[in-house]
Length: 273
Image 1 (tube, rainbow, N blue to C red):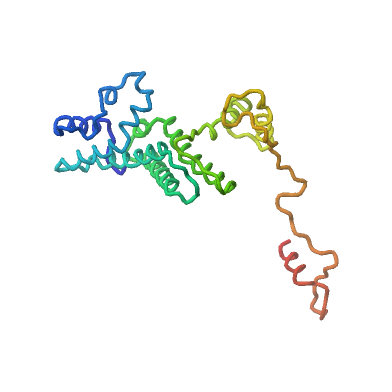
Image 2: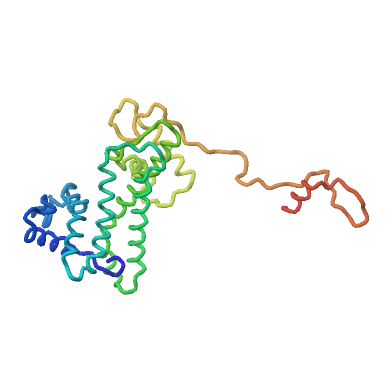
């Protein structure tokens, strides 16, 4: 459910059925029974899911809605397809991203807020029973993967392009392993179920991950075998927030004294104390 309108698989089935019965040339000719009623193995095939969520499916759903006298019930389904079609198009795009102002990065941010608002709307809804809220959204794992891609890819692009002015990133070659691997090792190999490690525990684990990668092993993982790996260290003898102190020679002015060594700078520091 989104904005009070249900999103059901039946909408996709009805749109495909209308396409088959109405159009001599199907608007989305790739749809088969494996797309509509996948078995356990077919549910794991990404190309089947993409065909049901891409631009062709959006065009079919919009055409189906235009053929109906009342198509308000399809509003949320069409809105979902508008987001997923953009998402698929961006990560299938082989054109390079060469600057942080690329429109595709802004589109990913807009898609992220759409899914975040959807999740918030369902969780805060009072009309949906608590035991039905999880069924009104994609699975938790699916939502986590979507959010990870929508946040990690723009962050990687911005960091890389700011550091390397002549650099570029191809969206179709990106995998979120670069964002997931270190967190999987951080949690799985060292801290286990500790979801709130201290700064000291985290820094030691990160050093073990970075420096423990063997240069002889060329597994081609995103964070393995880097000759330029540097140890994570942010130790400082100085306090995080240094408290200003009053100068030793400063003397507080009295009512009887006409002049003193209480300078404006020392006065400011004194007031802070």
